[in-house]
Image (cartoon, rainbow, N blue to C red; front, top):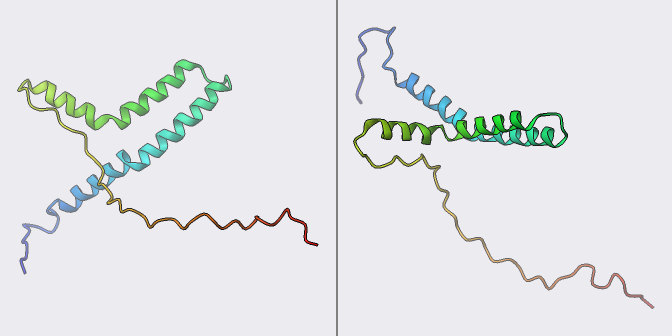
Length: 122
């Protein structure tokens, strides 16, 4: 068991702070941002169709959402383009892929609960 020694108790090693910042970044740039952008674009579209909002303002919101969701790719392009080293383009981060397992086959569709509902019983 290894014990890390800090010089003082007031200066933490920084790993908790770094982890917290990365968690907040993942939260704001992940599913929460995507959900908020989808809701914003839907509401702006309804307002534009109803004539309550000019098209220019609606397009401004859509462009802002595109910049927000594309920020990692835009930043990687600036970093790769600004260096002038001709480095390979940086790929955007990918979400972890879920293992897709085939589901069980469906039961046959030969059972009809309404098959005799329209027949007269005499």
